[in-house]
Image (tube, rainbow, N blue to C red; front, top):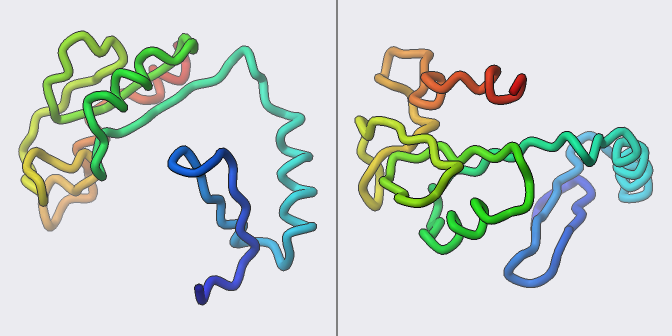
Amino acid sequence: TGIKCPIGTLGEEDKRIVIYFAHYENFSQAKSKWDERKKRIHWDNLYFIMTDGNKCTEEITREFDALPYEHKALPTYRDLNGVKSAIKFKADLPFEGGGSDIFAYKSSISVKRLFDDWDYVKFFNS
């Protein structure tokens, strides 16, 4: 594969997440740090943000919205009626497949992205 760092996976088959442990020399180091950091997670205070780019279907957005967690946000350029966690952005910047990439820069000379219009600090402090 040409990747020179340890790789871990969570989940199975089509619901698998691949994790690249870029700062570790071997899998044993990566796993040790992963296990150490897992202990610091506050399971009753989790925040989730998902975007609907990269082939995300309306079904997937509804599955995300139905997750049993209080703090969820789904920044989107689409109209997702009935999806409570959706945060609608103005679709200014076309990309492949239509719509807008919320992580794209507002212009070729801008340092601001569409995503920067959302007060995500307020979301995390809610």
